[in-house]
Length: 285
Image 1 (tube, rainbow, N blue to C red):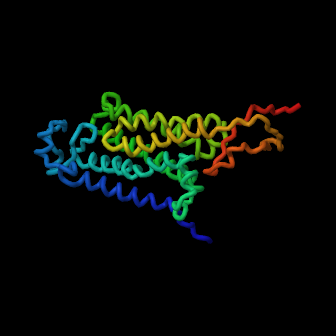
Image 2: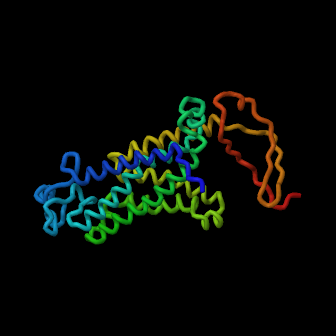
């Protein structure tokens, strides 16, 4: 059997691995870089419910109430939750940049095409979206389990981090699952799946307030670039076709013929074509 071929975008997982190492380093090194503190340091902060570390631990983690882990199982759950988020940080960036079609079209005409196949961008978006969809849910699960076991579940609605995390957790399945779960893809109309997918805008906004110290540039800047790219495509790259010929092919096919607009001869050449078709009756006269 033919072995699967590595693609350029698989290298992004190296950045995810580096981000994962940074996460572990922060969790298990002392301040100011890390949050691994002695029981007396935790007690001085005054956030831990028991005052300091529990279960005879000399060191634990509790810089603030939302990431307070003063016993063994809490430390394990916090590690799993934060590592799943840190691993995804580079993927967040690429999920938005992979859908900047106008920028990608321009890059196709540069030397970057020697290393990056810009035709892969939809595959990049789908692969990273699946990974982020799974790990976002696991991130939420481990935090909720830790809060529940520690009697801190009220943080889910009393704390900004909890509320924004809850919003992102609810939206994630609506954005991701209809696009890659076969049963949902077959039984949901494309328009509904596409509409739900745009809830990613709300998801991104929730995460901007969930962890503002790093998310604003990992999601905020790429999302802003995507928004500018989308607006450019909508207002500048749109073309009205006055005369077009539609012809039905069987139950699921439609042929469309029209004369290419003059500006299609200008650079940069387009590699994506979105067509807004008028409604066509299932029973043509």
